[in-house]
Image 1 (cartoon, helix red, strand yellow):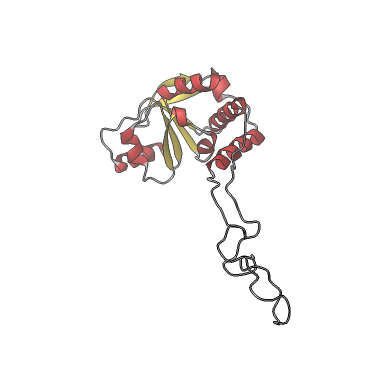
Image 2: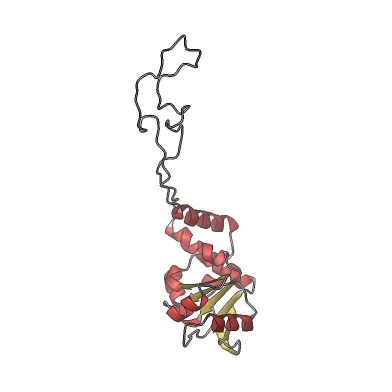
Length: 207
């Protein structure tokens, strides 16, 4: 069973935490991680780009000039894609970009991402991260004490003071455990878990 040091916000070791091997010791499959991240990013695409075809643009359907004798290239409609103001050929239409991936694969991918940070020694457990007030300077000072400048912080439930203190600091993001996802884990160098969030992650990913 993997063991992680438990720190307080002053970067003082206050104990150790025994971690579940099924959550923090999973063998990483890069292909599955890629599939999960691709699914997440595809699902974020709005897919609402839309252009009008020659049938949909406004304008007369009458032939603009006679077929022969003008010296110009023949044309049958002002709405042709070749004309200014005409329709668009093969342009985008609203579509759904989302990809399908099984719930089992999504869960396994998240466990792999967490295990990857554990294997890199870039996972840290903190007993508490309560701030008395919304103060960015205080948050930066705490992170400087840990010598961390890029991290995803996972909390058991929403902590408004922590979220607002960190939101303007580049490289940091605070997420409740229910919102933890593969992309955000891999998009940050370090993963910081509050001790109470570990039990919630076990229930979510191992039950």
